[in-house]
Image (cartoon, rainbow, N blue to C red; front, side, top):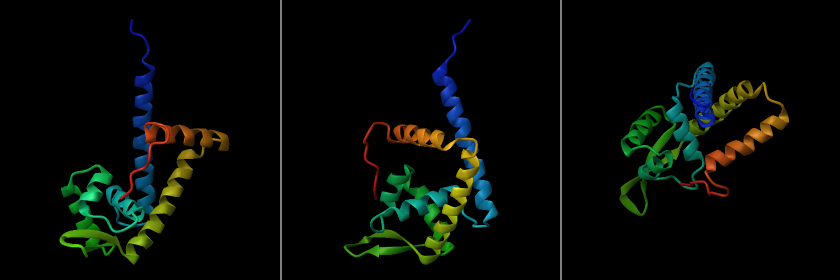
Length: 152
């Protein structure tokens, strides 16, 4: 007889929750007819948190993907007018990525979709349970207390 594996159960629950969050968020994005993939949404959110337009390599590092993946995302977002490539004033070989007004408008819509999705997901929890969950998630995301968030 095998003993229960509480960490395995937690891991499975986290994976199931992640998939559920992804499905619900995707549904809310589709309702708003934004024509933005979750990966493009993540890149736009990352750009919005950068102090200045980042290099493609900085975005790849921040998103924890290979540079080629960022190029594909930027190509699509640039084609839709949501970002633009601009030369680095200090080094003409470097290209920086900047949000456009259309990109900022899309971010506002994305935030609304994310809030709606979060409300749906968190509906069964009380306010106190939500606060506790927030603290626990921060601990898991940071990996250790006080770990600084990555910036561009």
